[in-house]
Image: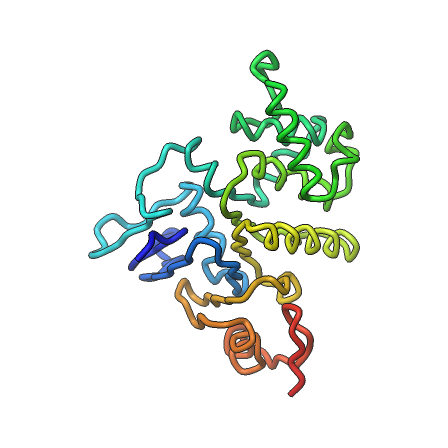
Length: 260
């Protein structure tokens, strides 16, 4: 079997005395477009923080394992060419006076802004411009982030991850605090990236964030997988009502009409 993009086996993470992830096992294949869906407190953010190495699993759990492309240890700069991770914390950190182009170029250095301009090559600048074009804000490349809308900033930070041409992106609550227009524009950018061959792993609590290209939905509750299957089976009133603990009415979810 080929190495998975992300594979967790029996992973437990503690937050104080609470199990944020509780013996979680999950496998996401390369090229899959997957949504990880769950209410606040379900373990979604902890899952992302595992991938960014901001938290670590319990070391003494039998059979516990976390691997990316089959490897448990990575050089961070090497990993960026395979997997881009965009978190809300990164978006907040990047919201400064730097231009969209500078922000995208800074992805080559793993920095916020560029502190050694002499190391920037023409090829880096062209790749950054191409990344901004891919998310639909190439025309804003010289605009400082603190003069851009929240949605434009979000797309600039996604471009920062795209400069490495990763094979997959993990997007953590990408629509957070965006208005209707910004959400629509970002969803369109996500769809284009998915159709271009970039694997998209969307982590969210919002049903409307799930773009049509996503075919699989994994739901989390209390740090465990509750459902895992095709979108048209998971995004139905029964599983969703169980997940969120409220009655879910049929509607258009993830580009699919559910008309019961």
